[in-house]
Length: 346
Image (cartoon, rainbow, N blue to C red; front, side, top):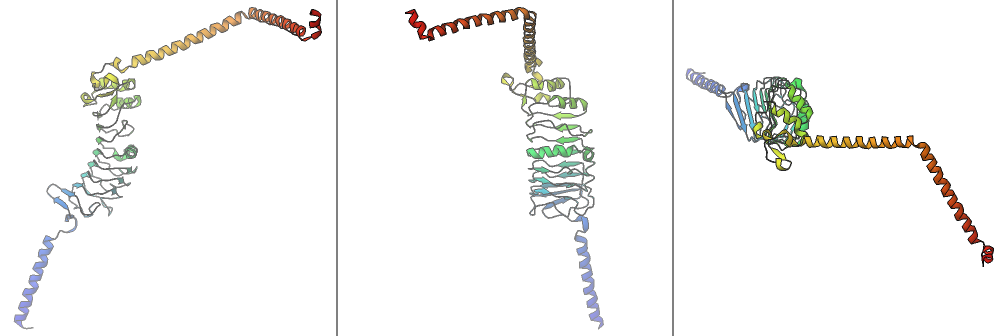
């Protein structure tokens, strides 16, 4: 090869190496890749994916991401290991999955998110929640299911929360706007500080739940926008409410009935207005009436027993009188039925 030709070839080779180096510099490598339809802010560690073209969880989430926000992605189902498909742990701290139309959460869906502190599943349409859905979330502090639960999913969620070893660090649980009819205090989470139950369908709080509230003096429970029925069944909760500071929104608790109590704030009620005194008096009246009737029955039996000889003679006399009367009727019948006797009489 001539010297000039070799020099041209060397220059051409150097240019290709430079182009290759430039491409390597600008193409993201490994965990730095930002998924399509997402915005990645490495300084804040946030990846935001809104209304993605393809349903499902993005598969290539950057390794440096500490906050992942998915909204309007029509996920429908969160499968097992949804965020760690390779089985490796992911250092996410905050995971927001609101407004995604999620209906089913399979067991171990959040497996691998061992550092997760905040999980937001609000404004979805959950109909199925597996018992082991929170497996591995040992550091989770805040869990939000605001306006997300169908009736069956609400029951399944309480069962999943009852596995307290999975959520031993949970401090805040938000269940607002889910048409719940009772306070879910069967969950065994000793570190739970805040329970949000606003805008549900709770009408009363039973004595068993009130006893549980007495055992958890550190817990704050929000109960506004519930249709409390201010009858005698609410007496135990009313007494606890007057002697407790665990309900920060107590001023917003309003009676839905009955009668004149509709619209009255619970804190303005008087204990006698609950009607428990009338019910107690009515119960006492029924008991007293039963005792009186029983006493009358006993007295009647005693009178019968003490006068048993006289009663026996009286019954015998009645029997003899009846027998004599029947004999008279029998004799007259025989007289009237004999035609010969009739002729003699003529």
